[in-house]
Length: 165
Image (cartoon, rainbow, N blue to C red; front, top):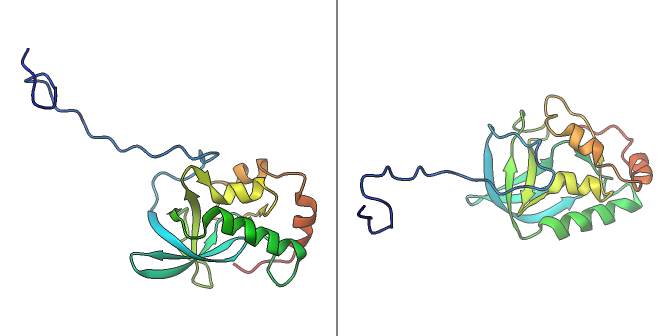
């Protein structure tokens, strides 16, 4: 049977284009039917907050479902911030919405991935943050709770202060 210039059989239906998402380590919980945005991280504010530029506009992004020590209150805060910098600073990230768009401080609430790394989950697994529940944004809460490491005892103490979201 004759073939087209692309090597397809003449008369055969054209292949259906498909969109594939890169597999994200421990990212099975990530919502698939919500908004995704791509941006570049311009600054790391602390262990759970970054500044991102999306289409020329800068936004502050708060990671959903985790809490790290505040930069003014704890010795672990600098370590968490440095780990966050190593993961995302200067890199192109994908921001994934759960349910809420912003918190009461007008920060975007997002799950963040870079390459095949689920940043929120990695910070918990590495002992830099703890899992916290802020309904209705709870799609990955169980993933974060399963990722807790033995290092979390001091982090839990540092994060026990109620955080205003």
